View 1 (cartoon, one colour):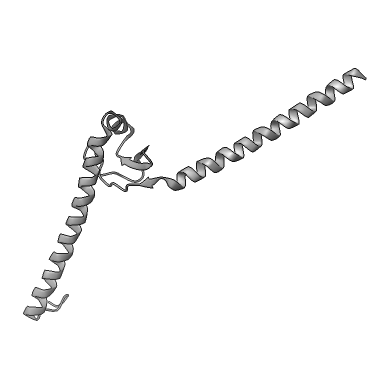
View 2 (view 1 turned 135 degrees about the vertical axis):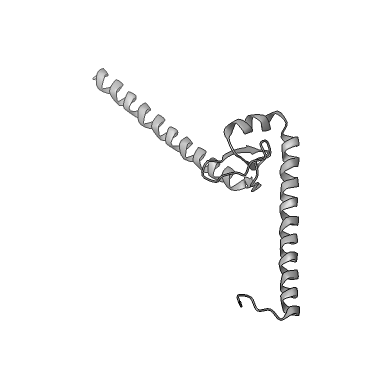
Length: 126
């Protein structure tokens, strides 16, 4: 009889602890999901450490102060960790230059169109 009672107690403790574990695991996954939605990818296309173009298939990422930074490789992340402010500044400059380069490209295209219109040229005509 004592053996049966002891078995019931052990089974009860086991099922209660597994239920608590599952509840904690579900809560942790919800916390991780909500954290991931609050992170902002800065979208840098050039590695701030090496200056190389970042290849999407092999890039490394690192989260710092709620933002995700892209790197060409994992070793560059270690360098970033030593002086984040220095490399964040480089990323901001890259993003500003990318914007200016796009504006310059659009302006150049517009000027080409105006020249063609003035000269009466038709694109694709030989």
